[in-house]
Image 1 (cartoon, rainbow, N blue to C red):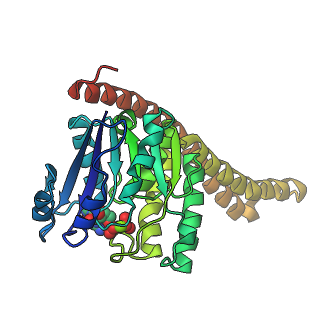
Image 2 (image 1 turned 180 degrees about the vertical axis):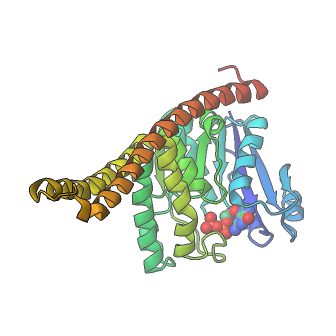
Image 3 (image 1 turned 180 degrees about the horizontal axis):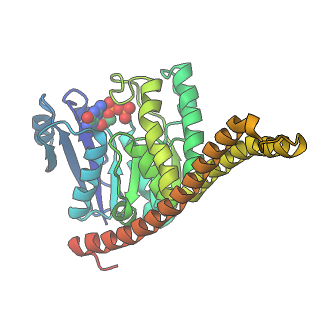
Length: 319
Ligand SMILES: Nc1nc2c(ncn2[C@@H]2O[C@H](COP(=O)(O)OP(=O)(O)O)[C@@H](O)[C@H]2O)c(=O)[nH]1
Ligand SMILES: [Mg+2]
């Protein structure tokens, strides 16, 4: 079995040596451990440091493309390197690399396709009260969107089985962790959780500048997940709400028109008729969008099935 540990790095020359040194050199049941460093346009000596410390596999971005693209490209490169299991960790030594054997164990035993290191965010001392609250709320919203039950959906310490890595098709620009958790759950990948303790902070997170910024950037991914995976639930609920709001003024209009026997049928309450019609029109659009989005969802499933075959063919994987 081959394990590829990928480390996306943007200017991590200071902490990378600690990360590399803490990665286990041997793991029982694993024949080969390769480290893949994804250099996301570093301008410091990250690459030289990595080479000096024995890293053999690199993926270079000539300009900074962000963590989501780094993750996506790294995942595919790891598969090309022949990975049976892929581990993701970070260059800032946030995660306990010594726990990699525990992280991959459920995959080795065939008990899981994805293992997420749960940082137990509610216990992290250097997280502010607001960050903890947003973390809790965000995870809850995400679990509803993804029909999942993960305690730390945005942890960057994860292990993927080869099949899970092949079947993932990340598209988001920012929230790769949220998105891939949603995808794994939708594809019915078995998700295992490993409680971990993060290392003492080496520097501030550059991804997570503030809770508000994180919410602003993650919200589109979560909303898109609803639309992509549960279009009926999203558009039909919206359509139903608009229909109810629209029916109320129309009933009011009809009631007045009938009971008050106006000469011109409801002429004095034309506003109610207009308002109701607008909402009912909106509800029909929403129902129609639900049907179209569902057809697109079906199309995407077929595309993803084809993509899986193409990837397996490219990687010369038989099963
Ligand atoms: N912030 C940031 N990190 C990147 C980027 N590309 C790769 N990385 C790496 O992604 C990892 C996560 O970044 P970090 O700032 O620690 O954010 P965190 O996920 O909130 O802990 C680190 O190893 C970075 O070196 C990028 O464009 N921005
Ligand atoms: Mg970090």
